[in-house]
Image: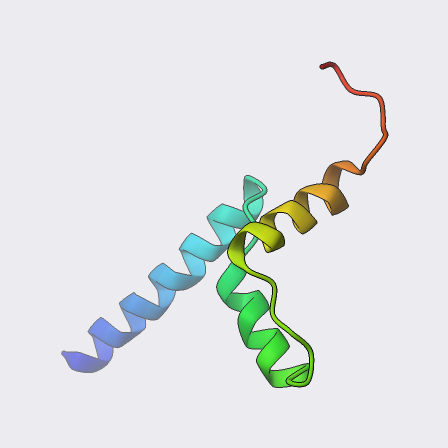
Length: 67
């Protein structure tokens, strides 16, 4: 029973991550794991810095918009 519960928990995590990415919410936890694993000598952005960075990357600065 524990194995089934573990598999369901893992599936739920994958599902939540996929759903967030589908609606444009970046995954901060994945970013932290990536930075710690591949770039341990570089500072990790705060959550707010990370969101600002992702919004900038997605929509860009200085582009004309509706507002």
